Every structure is written in structure tokens, then in C-alpha cells.
Image (tube, rainbow, N blue to C red; front, side, top):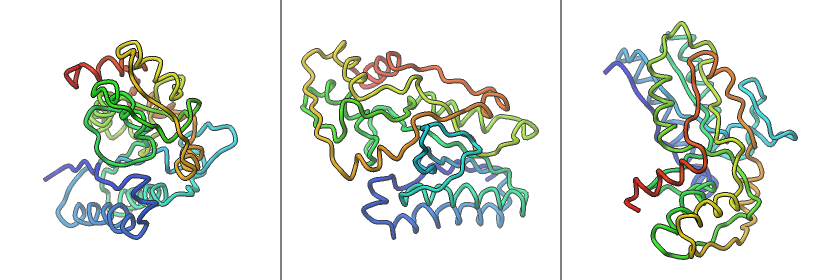
Length: 245
């Protein structure tokens, strides 16, 4: 084996419910991947980090140089993974590369995370079942469609090592970041009778409000040509099409 894509992780809600398991799965998980790579000569490791690796910032804007002081266990484990990967690159020469994703949106997502109200809202229209979102209509977090995310990982993997200077990159989101209300309006274009209500959950809102509102992806664009292709309209249309709707 020459390459590893390490995508497995417990998400935000799960990590907050069981931070001890988060250390075992997220923290020790990336350690074992990197140590196995060192022992067995794996040349390249691709790691998925997250916008959750940042603490709340007043402007809501974060770049690759923004100080990372996350307040949730999920973010803590992601920062640990980033730093450990960079250490293994410097110390043992492993070609470690990572991305900090916005919230992923796509069909069939089953894992529990506070940002998962986005795909669940679209699925509510598809399945014709009511959904009660745990945020407000004004709730807004950076999101990216799953097809853009997959392409992003492939492009980072294929980039020449001479182009990879930053190594762990923010990758941009649908701009501007749609609110839950914006998403609902787009869904109603396809499912006018969709039944979606909003009941903010205090614990979920605390996490959602700690998330940056904009990820600066300048380094990814400059170093290996990253660009986003799916906007809100295209995302909802393709989500429905891929789900057989």
C-alpha cells in the first residue's frame, strides 16, 4: 500500500456526547494511521480535518493562518490530527496533506453532526416526512456539496508535491453561506408542500454559533487550483437527482 485516505471520524454531536470515545477514535485513529504508514512505507496520507478546528472569531472569517483554539472535542481531535500529520511529515518524510472541510451535504448521510440539518431538510422534501430543524431560519454555516468534496480530495492527492506548501488547507464553501431559510426556499421550488419547522436546541446552537462563517481558501486555489463548482441551486438539484427524486 502506497497511499491512505483517512476519512473516518466521530462527528461533533457524537464527540460531545462521548469525548472519551472521541479521543480513541479520532485522536488515536490518526496516530495509528500515521505510525502504520511509517512502519510499512506508505508514501502519502490524505487527512480530512474540519472548520470545527477553529474557535469562534469575531469576524467569522478564518484563513489557514488563523489561530486554532477549538472549544469542542471534535475540533480538538482534528487539530491534533493536523499537527501530528505535519510532525510525521517533518520527522519521517510522509507526504501528509489535509483539508478543513465545511459541512458536507449529500444524499444518504447517516452520521450525527450538528450541521446535518442541511441534508435532512432536503430529505424531508424527498421522503415527504416532516422535519424539525434544531436551528433557526437564520442559522448559517459554511457548506460544500459532496461531489465537490470528493473532487477536492482527488485533486489534492494528484497535485505535485512541489505545489504543496501549506499542506493543510481550508477549502471554500458555497458563497454566500446559505441560511437554513435560504435552503428551505430552494427546497420548496421542488417540493412546495414540504413540512419543515425550526426549534432551536440550545446545545446545538452553541456549537453552530461557534463555527466560522467563511473559510478563506486562497492557498488551496493558488497552490493546486482548487475551485468550487456546486452552488446552492445546483446542490439541491443534484441531491434530488442522485436520490431518485
